[in-house]
Image (tube, rainbow over all chains, first blue to last red; front, side, top):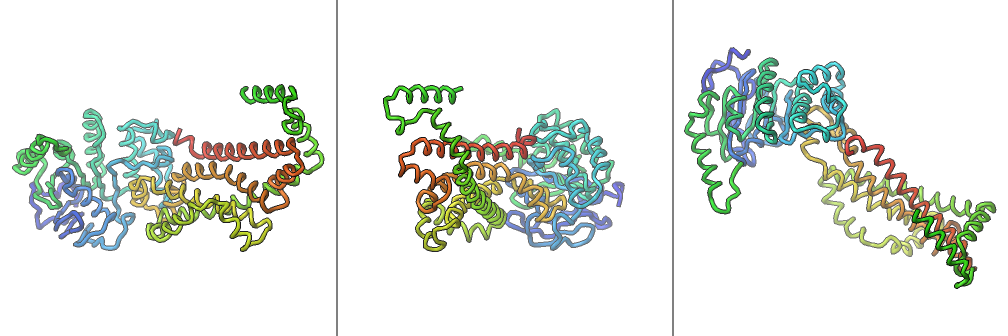
Length: 254
Length: 240
């Protein structure tokens, strides 16, 4: 199904076949999560720290166990390891291999799959505008450069689904805005289905087609990103966060 | 420069004859003795005997320590099962094993090899475990999501990232291996630098004792530098 086949509002429509479907997914944090994400769609999971967003992403990737069902293209993922789910995962701390240079980091997935790496690596480095950093090691990269390299590595194995865990957490506003724009462009150009976990409502709105609000392990609602800021839920969550921050001795929430 | 200074002071003080030369020989006399010992083959024979024991015990102990460390670092069940046992054995001073090993393996070349094995095994074991446990779990998960098998993750991610810790263990224990072989040769074995030391002590040959100590010091330094060089070669690009 192409992007033109996406539902236009927050409701899941019976006529559309989801690329990713979570049915009654439950584990130590997630509680009975049901969610459908469509082909080529960018879905943001938004919620406060500790809501279970990262756990839900790890569950989708097959990195942690769960009860319930996860379907990719109508195929049950039960027992299928993360390496064979066709997902690309961008970790919150990026998880670049510190002992490998940029080119080797990006080509790692291709090498372990015994695929030709050279041309593809160069292509991705060009796409992410980090060609000139090819022989540098992660310790010599800035936050934004690391982000680009990590994204290039994630895209190298041509995943059908991109899972991003707070990808712009440690970046300054300007770099963050710039990367959001580029990521959105790349995601649309490649037609990849994407789930983005974030606690930043602006990031969720700018990067996603739809936003799922998550709190205390549950999905509280799904809506188009356009109407995200007018949602009652987001305002109550933001108010709660400010209320927590205002409490004496409270460490608040990010 | 400081070493040259010490040597000059040593030579001058010894030449003042404040202490008899057989008790405190000048540096030049020690060097002459060293030349004679080398020329006669005495130093070489004893050195080679000690070196062979150190290399055998150190190589076996390190290999076993690193292998077990990888197993315990990667498999939590193994770690939980074996950690209490090794925690009990590790605090025993290595020479404390000597009487038991004398009975079990006898007084022969195997005794110092076994002692060096024990002294190398535990630090390499714990350094390897620490190195592996210190690796960011997300880095391993990233390799897994990218399609790497457990074996590939071990060889391409875990071992390279544990190298600095492993080499710290090797560096520290190489010197210890020399100290242990000398101790074992002093108490039980008739050949080696330690045995030469003991013979010289009974014959009041202070110059020979000092020659042995110089050789020992140089070997500890050489091994330490060798492993430091190896570590730097393997990791300087990504650690700086």
